[in-house]
Image (cartoon, rainbow, N blue to C red; front, side, top):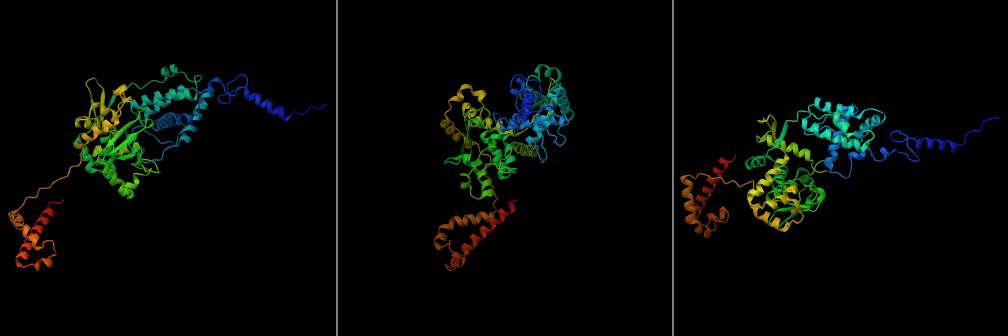
Length: 451
């Protein structure tokens, strides 16, 4: 008697039963009709962790950088660019989120199959030491990993207690970065060296006190020009670090630099003010990145003699004095205070929520702007230069002659062309020749003192 062949539905049912008995993510046994174990139900993918919508764009970028280094340290990112958090990439093309997520997912899969994630983490820390990452950056990146493991692997594969025991922080954490601020004269020197775009960047940071990302992410239609020439900028809660509404202001001088910059780019500044154009456009339709601004500012600081320095303190710690874009924000606070703006209003517009406490809940922005306008008259960087030309005795005698006979010359028609003036008589013609000689002498002196 021949055995009956199994029905196709029975085969599919048997396959489904086998799938239901093990977690489709980690392979561990499950109960009932579940497809995922209790651990995997509460985890997310690597890509979702990097691109979480609940964090700022700068935080998403840092998460991607973290995993890029983590993958490269564990031989999963051979083609990835070696990056340093405070260094330039020299224009090299970055790695996409998809590439990073794929590399790190393969590492997570190895952990689910039995590989120790603590060994991977130790290699990650050693890799950063070998490539001369600063102790501070190693400490920051090491502390970011537990959040990643909890979100993507779950408590079954990760224990923070074991992680802290096996993955040690670097002992050498004696370097301290101290953010220095440039003097007003150094800022004027930077402005003299800058293009209209660079002047607008420097002046915008110094006058408004905005954070690096806050200024470069403004659009032209966000500049609210006032009748006296200054501009008001609104920052919505989701655009600020402290998550509250804020107003910042730009002097007429800074607005004129922006006007000059966009007139050269587009021709019609008034039309630009109505558009979605970025105040500081970058590549591919995006705004200028804060990292690019950081490089621009570092070059300016170096050009005016404000390079980073290191010194050893009495307690043995090494203090590194650095000048960055954030230094200009500190200058803004000092300038506004010295100009006479009330301390509370300075904190409102600069954005120091921790210093204000509950006062930030009830700001009077109209009074703040009025007070700012009053003190803004003192916030002028470029002054008109008046050149004094020493006058010879001949020029002085000609000036005296002009003052004496100017009323007569006006009556005789000095404003007419030379041929008509000569018809007025020998006296008028002789006087006009003397005046023309005076003008030629003065013009010659001006040319001699021009650079």
